[in-house]
Length: 504
Image (cartoon, rainbow, N blue to C red; front, side):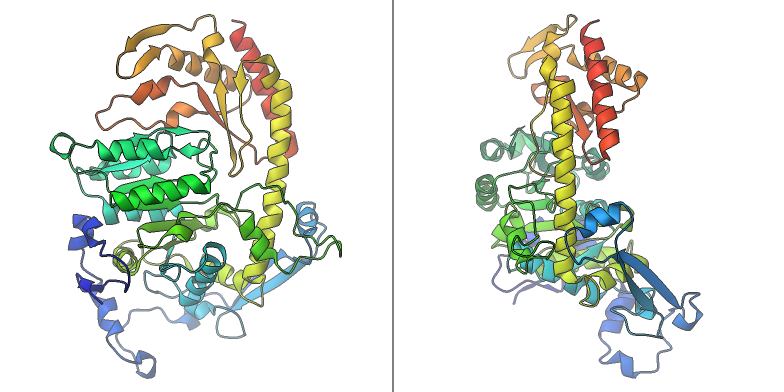
C-alpha cells in the first residue's frame, strides 16, 4: 500500500493525492492525538496525560428521548396529531445500559466522530449505495455546510476553478470564493446538469489563458437546490465517465436523496394492513435513483449526507464518505478546527439507530413515511398552483421528483414593459427582466407572500460575465413543505400578485 504525507492510500484505488490543496498538504496532524494513538492499549494505563474533564462532574446523569413508536406507517399521521404512541430512549452517564454512554458521548473525541455512530452511518451507506470501495470510510460532520466547506479547503487552492451547476445553493457556492477558488457554471435543464456541456467545458479548457483545468465538480444531484431537478441514472453514469476521463473529483452534496417521490408510496403490506413490509430497505432503494457513490470505482466521489432533512435541521450532524486518503486528511483538518460533532447529537442518533431504538431499518421506515407526507404536500402545492397561477399563463412549474422545491418560471416576456436591451453574439439577448422581477418580488412581499428570487442562486463565470445573462432569467424558488393551510394561502397570494403585476 503506497502512502502520501504519511497517509496510506487505499489498496486497489488510483492515487488521487494530486487533487489535494496546498493547505491540505501543508497541514500537520494534531500532535497530541497522534501521540496518543501510538500508545498501545492506553485504556490499561493510569492516565495523567489528557486534559479531559471527568465525567463524574458532568451535570447530566440521564437524558430521555421520546420518539414515535414505529409500529406501522400510520405512526406518522398519529405523530402529527399528537395521538400516537411514543418510545422512550434513554442515555446514561455510567449508570445504565444504552447504545452510547454519556461519559463517552460528552467527552473529547477524534475528528472522525464516535465509532458507534460512524458504524451506523456505514451500514446505511452499504444498504442504500451497495458496498463500494469507500462506503466504510466515514467521518462525521456538523452537517453538509460544514462538510462541504472542509472539502473546499481539502481540494481547492487559490486560482483553482471548480465546476458547478449554473444555479446552485448560494450558501455553499459563496464559501470557497474567499480562498481564491472560482466557479465555472455548467448549463442545466429540467433533468439537471447536462453531461455534454460539462465535457465541452473540460475539452476546450485552455490552461494557458484560464489557469488549471477544473478538477472538482460540486453537484446537488437529487432534488437540486434551487431547481428541484434530479439527475437520471443515465446522466449520472455519463458524468462519472467524464470525471474519469478528465480526472475530476465529484463532490456529491445529497441532502435530498431520501426525499425522492416515486410511484410506489407505501411500505404497508396490502395483505396485513398497518404492518410494515419486511423488505422495506430493498423496496426503498428500488424507488431511488442510484447515487454517484454507488457508481464509484475509483474513490473519486466524495459524498455528503445529513440528518437535517430527515430528522431535524439544527441537529447539525452529517457524514462524509470518501476514500481513505481524503478521509484521513479531513480528520486532520477537523482535529485542528471544529473538532468532533457535538455529543448530544451523536448520543441521540446513536440511540435512535441502535437495535434498541428504531434501528437502521426503522429509520428508513420513518423516512419513507415522511417522504410520503412531503409527496402529498408537493401534489397539493401543484394542484393549487395550476388553479391559481398556471391557468393564467403568466408562470409555469413542473412537478419535481425529489427535494423540497418548485422552480417557477415567470413568463416575463408577456409583461407590457418587457424589452430587449441588447443582443450579444456570445451571450444572446440581454433584457430588463431582472428589474421587472425585482418589481414582482416587491409586490409579492407587499401582498403578504415571500418567495426566493432565482437570481440569488445564479453562478457567474470566472470573469464575472453572466453566461447567457443568467441574472435575466425569470425564476423563483418556492417550497412545498409547509402545512396545507400555508401552501393554500401562499400560492393563492402569489397568484393574485402575479395577476396584478401583469395588469400594470
